Image 1 (tube, rainbow, N blue to C red):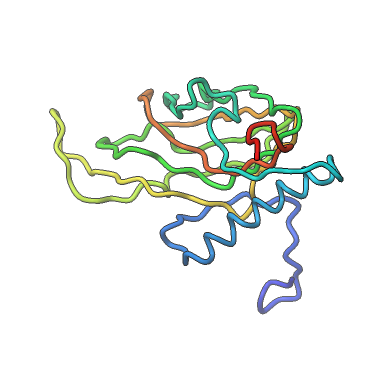
Image 2 (image 1 turned 30 degrees about the vertical axis):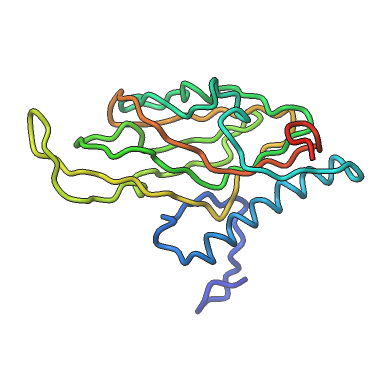
Length: 200
């Protein structure tokens, strides 16, 4: 594909961008999720050409998060490992595609606990997401010390899903404005061998 108005081909070797889901048409969001599912299925089918495969929602447990509960604590003004997803290994017979994330709480602060993510798969950084776009101003809120803006989180979604194959490791590094606890849910899909989790 050429960039409109030029003779330059648009062919980056890697693309890592996100969009606010609420700024996209529902059919576009559905299409991006479907594309992520198909990429995970393709990886699984190449590894297991004849076995039965199951597709399901990704949960925190798929990234070795204890108690199947998303959580985190920001690292102020520095890159640091996410305290739940650091050197997590994808189970044998399982393939994961991460396509977005969503902060699960409103923040009343002038600094945010997490503003960027790096995704390191198999030792290589494969994606970097700016998370500022997750926060949308909703008005003023009152704290004990000052009036600050209330920031209502929204979901973000990528055109370039992060696919992690069986037995590969994933580490998420985070950058934030303060060392505050937060709850951010990653959104994705799992393709795995039948009966690994679900037993039809």
